[in-house]
Length: 579
Image (cartoon, rainbow, N blue to C red; front, side, top):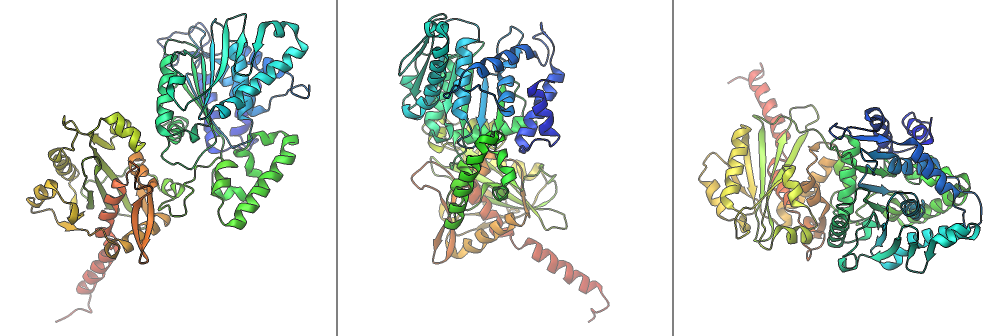
């Protein structure tokens, strides 16, 4: 059994300590081996790829042949073998690379620069072709140089013992040039996509992607992908430790990668490996640290690295804030704000498959828009269970006064993708203004199609528009103004969070609703909780969350009232009742 396959089986069988996502990646690898056809494969098949074990082994041997800085023989760790074998072992019908995109995330100091450098040298030295281009990109030139310099040092180490390599490669401070294939590798900063124009990369690396702003990330990704669009061997690598921005483009890529690994999405040309803890409580279990720091499998490295992690954790614990340690040492996405309203991990613990809401009681909340905001409709459905549980969901309407692309960059959210998921609708009016008639029609259809018994529709009376006027004509709909001050919203805002923490607020995987709660912070005014945007000057929105709080304001006493009604009915039906 080859080393990559052994790693996969050991991970699944519990012989290696790995997280949920790596187990899923290992199972995907095994499943794909069963699906694969040996060459020549038929491109019309559902899975037109094959695994070239001999070539994967050749790549591994090549990397292990590179001398280290202290001239010791390099021995790859099993997780590195698993990673590299998948990238280079899987091939297409024509023998090209199967994967076009690679997302790799792990804690800091786990050898990311070494991985990037190794991929670059394999592309330059082993992958077929001439005039190949390898681009090391990052938010700064200094960051881009980290992996580039690692590759440069590896080549210089080889050149000391090989006259052939000295003749073949020319190395300068800013470029590695292969004279035999007319290929090169360069470090580039992504602080302006003009730096990337004109390149047609074979391998493009976006290093520390979590630290790149959304606009720069999306622009860089777009330019790099367009440059390699006709390159059968083109590979875009997004590599980073997690971060604090829960609405970042790299976080969105990580979410997409998790959907692939869990089987929610099929994307056979996207490889994802995410090493992180499964739960924040595992920071206090040193045996679990290897989940986020796979390099701890090297006992020599583990001797010093574990002590450093423990020291960082001890210091953070004394200071009362371990968020920085969770991100950097354990690769867990964390808001990093003490005033954050909802912790993402608490939100995601309550994910369920959407239940059948036909004929249910319902509370609806509306957050109306100005020209550039969102109009959001959120609803709260009391479920028929013993746990007194609510189900929450939302749908929004997006204005495009300055163009949808600009709005997505400003708001740091992909509305077009959300529309495909059924989370929102983008206005079709030429003016870009939200179509009130479309909002009204959607809401009425939603109520009718689900035969909902609407017990209340909560809205801000100080920000009402034509939509409320149209709804008022529907006499069967109970409209309730919800004042937006602390006197009205303090208790619902606090209780809503408690409901979520108690596991009594369930929701589907609605990314736009999650985005809204990630952007929400608590502002304390006269000891009252008021929901605010994380940055009032930014384009980030909380409208779906605000709409849901409006709905909860009306429905928070639902189960208490149901219990009182039940007790009252039982009393009237009992022998105790008489005139």
